[in-house]
Image (cartoon, rainbow, N blue to C red; front, side):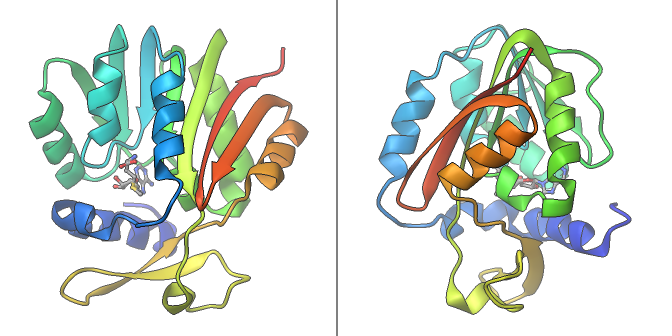
Amino acid sequence: MSADPLLAEQIAYYRAIANEYQDHYIEAPGAQRQIDAFNKFDIRGDVLELTCGQGQWTEQLVGRASSVTVVEASPEMITLAKGRVGEASVRFIQADLFSWQSDQRYDTVFFGYWLSHVPEERFQTFWQLVADAVRPDGWVFFVDDNYRTEAELIEGPGSSVVERRLNDGTKFRAIKVPYDASGLERRLQELLWDVTVEESGPFYWGTARPQN
Ligand SMILES: C[S@@+](CC[C@H](N)C(=O)[O-])C[C@H]1O[C@@H](n2cnc3c(N)ncnc32)[C@H](O)[C@@H]1O
């Protein structure tokens, strides 16, 4: 359990929504370009996936990697991902990413729809975790979106706190930072990443490696 109440609530939200996660996918043009970029990216070697959710990306990674390690806080999501990809092909680590450290380096670090849930004040620490987990000749690839509805902006558009609801109406607060491609690229360049971020509609994706 996270000591930060908002981050603990975010984990509780994803635990509660695990079995209906697919009901809350956003419908907007642009998703296909992101999927095409994921399919084109040269995912190889030992892969670290940060948050697997129900395992839809994990399933794709398994076919392209030598090994896949997943870090995910929700045991419910891990159970669903295991149901999809099996237990033998993936090392699942149940952990809070805000207190987890990698015990090895990977050729590819991938995260889907996770970066936007990292609070802005933890952005730099999070990217240090990523830098520490990727091999010097490795690559980072990420996909995400910046989609937020008026209704969920309970603290207004200037805040990254949003309210999400389960199908039964239960409310949770979560983080949703609305990055745009050029702003995110600049921010990562300031942290000394070689990085390219592209976008299509509310969807974006990026390729990055620490500058040597
Ligand atoms: C938007 S979902 C993305 C899931 C998956 N990557 C995908 O693209 O479908 C966010 C995921 O982050 C996980 N999560 C939330 N807070 C976390 C934390 N502090 N540490 C690790 N995982 C966390 C949730 O359980 C959920 O699976």
